[in-house]
Image: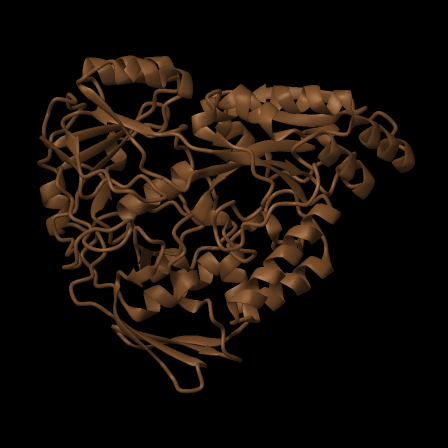
Length: 530
């Protein structure tokens, strides 16, 4: 009998009974009912509220569901919610769940579960934190209904509850959602279209999911992350294969079905094989960033952070990591070029380095040569070459740099430490965000500047928080855009972090795969193997 989790499915659960009969062991990729997928990184943390890591977010979409989901036009649509109402004064929101929602252990989803889940998510997420500043009370009215009472009207309620990427407000049973948000949960009970099979999953090798036979999808066609989540395969395996060349060879050989991201230099190889296809599943793309640690030397000093900003040149990073110009874009807009808030910085900052200005600022700051402890990820191909470029640019700007190489999961663990850089902490590291995560000052985690709520790096800037608060209250689009620009300008002035250009990269799949949805996240419902 398959064991779903230590606390998992209750004895006699119909879902567990069916899961126990489904293809034990490793299934070949040629099996039409088993989908084998390679993520962009290994999955070790399974709590999508505890971490913003995208691999964990993707795991969350397999087993959890959301109240609202964004469609292919990035418009939030009801998902678990059947209907909602807003009072005339815009201060009371009432949500009614749709019929047939059930946890993997057979218990019904309730309003109490949703209230607890929203609270846990909001404790960790930038949009959730901002929304809760406006919330007077959340409570369950009955088993299928809950309300959110606001102190004053807030225009981002639905956008917040339908946030598509990290952290995603996934719904969990109340007993699980009541877990301290700063402690990882040890249960994988959701209500989503797939069930996690703990007994067959082994971090470092694979994670196994089976179709949830009791999941009731919405009637609407799938669109982005919204609509009907129809699982068309019985089993999904997240295969952990860090070597990108091995991934491509395995795809060509038919040993796996899908790859999340293909290194750009290997795309021509795939295009020569008629049995595989490349899929542009995230057309809005991603943005590279360099995150500074504001708590520890040397980047606890504003002028030293500003010196680092003056040493940056986006195209150096884009050429080193992406290579082909068709797959990247130099863009100095924090909120993504080509989108409503995407206004570029005036001047050459981030586009053309000024090493003399960098050195002058270091001299003004009294820089004593404290090395920048720069964490380099070696297991995410798109990030591997970022840190060496940063090291070269910073050294030209007068810095000393100690680049330390490690796998991505070590970066994810270490970035949470607030120790001095020379005591096991860090000074800077690279990551990236999908575009939908950073379209405005509230959704962009990097912009939070209250150290009690901020993302790793912990900036402290009350003026920034006032601007973000003003943006959250504004309903006029023109004024909102002006406030977004003011937020960007403040981030530049305070050297809060560096955004280093946009990149685009397809995934790849066997030619037999159909139904891969265009969305900011790779999801596995709607996919078939012909």
